[in-house]
Image (cartoon, rainbow, N blue to C red; front, side, top):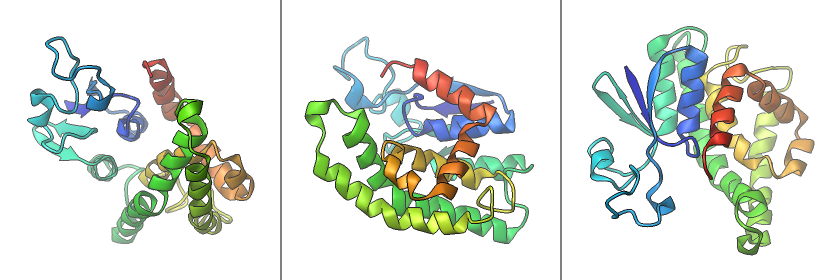
Amino acid sequence: MLKIYGVYRSRATRNIWLAGELGIPFEHVPVIQAYRVADPNAAGAPLHTRSAQFLAVNPNGHIPSIDDDGFRLHESLAINLYLAKKHKGQLGPRDVREDGLMTMWALWAATEVETSALNVMYHLAAKPVAERDPKIAADGIAALKAPFAVLETELSGKDYMVGGRFTVADINTAEIFRYAMPAKELFAASPNVAAWLKRCQDRPAFRAMMAKRDAEPA
């Protein structure tokens, strides 16, 4: 059986959402980030990213990772691309061109969007108010205007990113754009992006994943 390592409050959400869309069973192994553990070396510490048990799975010490019947894979976006191709169906590529597009959008979202979107999330919403830096948030919003414009154009006249249907490309990209949601002005200026993200997040598998994420301790 597929094992997904990582807590819900991590990039493992991408893999759990995809597994839900595919309808495949999996064992969830809740590995928490070491920086969130008061004393990672304590005898009763929960399984975390620097635990010897997890480092035997992923020597990088990051979540998520998967073990798919003995095949181990790391990096959330790569995991999703692999699972979508393995299980075929509508979420994966139909041909090599769609495969290229899905890979391109995953790399684009990771390199052009994720860092700035995380800064927006942390410094507009996630961090305690006293720890927020308005300049970091403003710089993140400014940096995101260009990629938002790119996706806004791409989604003109389209419901989804690749092949006229909901695919792994939407999951990988939507989970990164989710971080930017506190910057409402970005979505107000990009109605196609806003409608697409809502469309993705209205899916039952996303809602089920987020309900478990919200129930997990912060």
